[in-house]
Amino acid sequence: MRVITTYGYSESAAIGRCQDTHFYSIVSSRLDYCNGVLYGTPNSTTQKLQKVQNCLARVVLQQRKSCHAQPLLKSLHWLSITQRINFKLATLAFKVLLNLNTFVS
Image 1 (tube, one colour):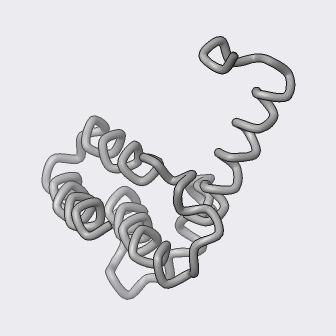
Image 2 (cartoon, rainbow, N blue to C red):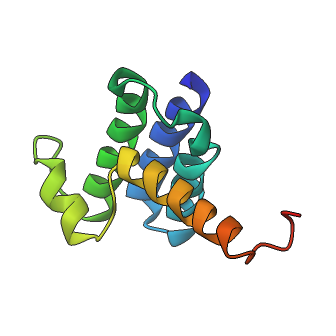
């Protein structure tokens, strides 16, 4: 967990300097990496990843650190970390039930 959050903070700082969409895609893919394992964990566990996402939203929209993150996430049409986890698992379950994934046999 510490590696992912540290990686996310350093990458989001790089976004502020470079304003490059490649860095954004790296950070957002890291936020989604193995998030199915985090399903049902306490909020204290997912709170670190939520802080990274909030920081990323502030950097993308060029807002101050003191700005509330919830309206920023809403304006970017981003789900919170717990909602992302639930959405990913629900999508996976839907695909398995309908046999849409070729890798699941």
